[in-house]
Every structure is written in C-alpha cells, then in structure tokens.
Image (cartoon, rainbow, N blue to C red; front, side, top):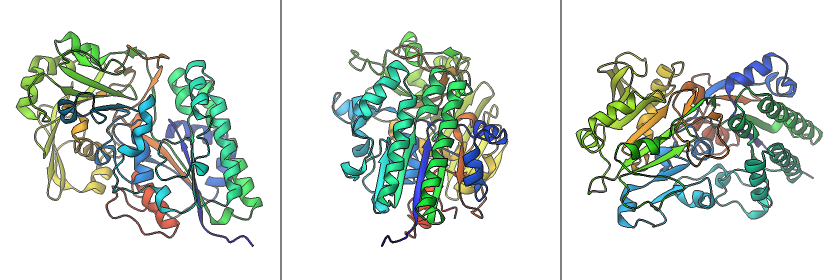
Length: 472
C-alpha cells in the first residue's frame, strides 16, 4: 500500500515577471493557477539576486545562498588571482553558456547542500544544478542538448517546455519527495521577442496548462492535500532597444578587453564578463598584482576620466566598486553614495547624490530590515545584494548595471537579444512567488527564503548558514 508523505513540486518559470503574471491572472488568462493554487494559496512578489541571471539565480532557492557567497558571480565569471597563477587553468574563467556549463556543479561550494541532497527521492528537469542526483532521476538529461540547440538557433522553444511537462507528469508516478522543473520558454521568448510579446504570453499560458494537469493527477492519486506546489522565477526582463558593448568600450579606452568567446587575447588589460546582458563584471589587468582593486587604487588603474565617462553613458544605470572590504560605492548620473558594512548591519550614505533613492540610512539595518527598507524601491534589496556580490573576488574590480532598454553586449551575441536581464533594477529583481498555502510569514521575501521554507514544510531541519529564512 502506498504510503502518504509530504512532497514538493517546484516550478521555476525562467524569466517570468511578477507583473505580467499578475495582469494575466487578473484577466483570467491563467485559470488553473487561479482555481487550483490561489483559491487556497498565495500570490506575492519576492526579490531574486544580483546578478539576476539564469544559473546563479537558481542558487538562492536550491542552495539558500546568493551568487557572491556561492562564489558563482555570473553566467560568465573571471578570477584574476587564478588567471595570474595559470592563465588557462580550469578556475581562471568560466562561461556556463557553452560546454563549461558542465562545471557548474563542481563550482558550487561543497559545504552548501542542495535541496536534492537533503530531501530524499528527488527529480530534476532541465536545471543545471544536478549535483548528487542519480542519472535516472535527472529526467531531461537525455536529449537536452539537441532540444536546447534547436531552441537557440531555430527558435523552436515550445518543444522544451512540452518536454519538461511530460517529464514532470511521469515523475509523479514515482511518488517523489521533491521535483524541480524548469520551464525556460518565457525567458527564451522574452530574449528573442520581448517580455510582453504574444509568443512570450503563450509560454505563460502553457505553464498554466501544465499546472492544471499536474494538480489533476495529484488529486487522482490522492496526494494533493500533502503537496506543496510552488512557482517562482529567477529574474524578470525588460525590452532592449540599444546594445552597448562594454568590452568594446574598455578596449577603445586603452584597456584591451578579454571577453567570451575571445579569451585568447594577447596581453589583455581588462576582462569583461557579461551576464544576462544587463550585468557586467570588469576586472582590471593593467597592474602587476592579483589583488582586487579598491578605492584610489581602482581609480588610478581605470583612470578617473574613464570612470566618470562610463557613468555618463546612456546604457549605464550605475556602477559599483569597493572602497575597502567594509564599504562600497555606487556611482550614477544622480551622484555617488556609500554603503558601509557595520557590526550591526548596513548603512547607506548619499555623498554627491542618491543613486538608489533611499535617503540617508544612519541606523545599521540587518539583512531582513535592509530588505524591508528597500523592497518597494527601484533597487529592491540593493544594499544586501551589493555586499553579497562583492564578498567574492570573482565579482571583479567594478560592476556595471545597465539602464532599462539597454544591454552591455553586442558583439558575439546571436540571436540578437531584444529582452535583457541581470541588473539590480526592480524589473529584473522582482519575481513572482506563488504557492498553494496561506498564512505564511508576510514580511518581504527573497528567493533564498524558499530553501528553508521547503525544508520546514518537508519536516527537515532548516540550515543555519543559509542566506534566507523560513517563511512557513
């Protein structure tokens, strides 16, 4: 006789915007989510992470940590210290957009267990986080490469979501503890068309169809009442009208840039790593050491005229850099501000202006108070996200966040991106958070909170070193 036990079905709708989902729900265009989930559950928004990009933004819900604390600071990253030690060593640089995606699991911190490693019989569908999952439970592994190639080059996106749904339905026959299913087509259609295009909306509607079929099957199996069904995203997107190639910019300013896929450049003066096309990490190589540059050392290496010129570029929303290991500077067309890491939390101080629009914050805010203070701003969780990112040297000497409508990569980008993400702006950081439960903690939430919430729902101990909390 089948034993009933709690289970979790987790939909990661890659690239789903919370406001698009809300408008579709209000218009009655997602009837299954409305009827089966929200009639007994909750729709809210949460914050993702910086950079808000596929791969690194899967870490918060599955490992409970941010990209900086996981040392995976983008879909592409560079490590100056490793580069100086052994230029073509395995850990000098990475792009998860190609064959190096195979390194993602070994790049994750070994002391951070994933939900798959904590929850018993678990199944993965189309996520790149597969550490410790037996091949028999990585359901979409076979055939994934061909499906993804056709999707990328031939724009055959829907077959991937269709395959994900088929694997998800079959996984329910195995009475799983946990299923993590990625539906990537909202993201892909948003890039190829734009986030509000009819092809993108069709992907939202297919997701709704999938939810309806999954709930129907769970009810037929008598398992619905013991199931947590949760949907969220890794990032939002905005429509892109202008490309600004950040690597080409630095090369033109005398800082010859190494970038993917051209990583064999002779005597590079900088390395520029782009994620989601709206986030750029800049590593300066025009100095003899392997250290991360801070404060005046950074300004000397990049040149204060270049720093100011970069800030004034229409494509640039803001730039950020370290003053030391305890303070960080934000520069934009609105002026410069300083974030200070103090024993009791974070403070924010406008200097020549207020890039984040927060005003003076003199009283130190812990991580949760910092989220609450910034949640409805243009840069939700901005203070914590800057600090977590710069905790890793792979974040670079300088970080660039693109203005909406622009991105930071032009050369080598096929197909042309007409929608982009990766920045710290609310349109990229805010994501939907939907689950078939009521009464959970209603404080502002991060996707890192999903990790401990699922553990608690499943009756497992929560993880103290997680960057998130339990909402339930």
